Image (cartoon, rainbow, N blue to C red; front, side, top):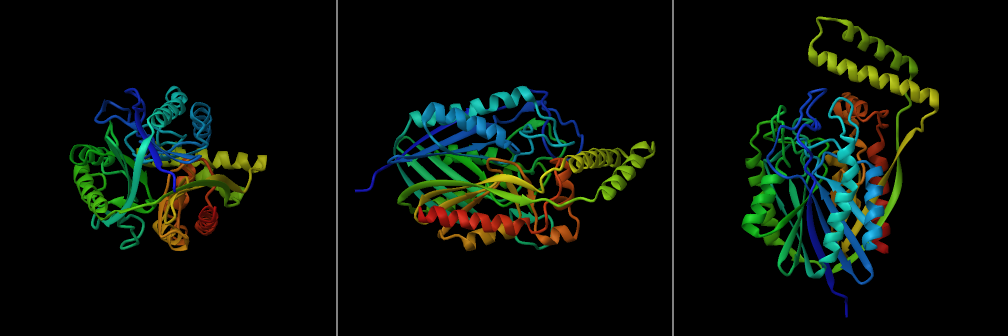
Length: 420
């Protein structure tokens, strides 16, 4: 007779103090938090069956470093014995920076020092409350919510994927949708979860459920209502999709397993002469009293980045970014494929197609923040994702084949866990 699924759920606030700089929306904006519209949370879901236990943690942050994830995992393992934990960020741009982001939000060291403890506390609380549970999976289309921000008419995964875990007095809704949480205005200084906030509120009020929000392949996707402040409208459309997915859901026979592997994402080898020329051009802008504030900010980013890459060249920096891929199997036909990338839609579609599972939820901003995984067209047009974001993350740009590398490694990991 198969063993029962046990599940536990807990939520711990991770709201920063007022005055902390918020992350994203542009260079050197000094968007310091002036008020709190919603508590940011670490929401932990623990699943157990037999001797396998997994933890899924959703963080209302723009991203998190592997160093902080490692600290949290050590504490979780010490307190609970759980060896496999997914830490995924919703990517809100109305919260503090979880990683250094040049020009896009200073980190608060005191805040980050406590973050792994909050994550571990959420998982420990969830693990202490394990009770018999059921699992179901459903999905629904949500057209008109999101748009491809890099290519007019480009691909968008207009589907919300929902895993519902019901355990006696509570119900968790693990909802994944690929769309940048940037519905708030670019000058917003109020801490919030962006559209995840009102979505969580409606699920709690109308479905008596706790949202465990996961971000999908949103690298090239924005809300149609981007930067409008019409956050509640975006959340309402997503809520309708989540409710439809829950209504269409089918039971999942639980079958838990987890695997991780390191993938080396290839970085471009930069010509020192090009870097010196970029630094010189930036210096001209910085020294020009008539240049605009926006041009000055952009030139500052370029100058600092070029100097750092020249130092890399002198120090023999590696030609790759090593990062974790993680796969969680929840049932024979259901798995999560997780990476720290801001993955373009086309690669999410490829991962789903190449996966041995009937239902594969592709999760971004997981266990790391490596920046965008752009398609080749983004490199050809020298777009923001290909050329500018590496400067923010203080790295060389990825090679144009980075998406192929990520997809191949993810497919291999999914095949491995399917056979486990």
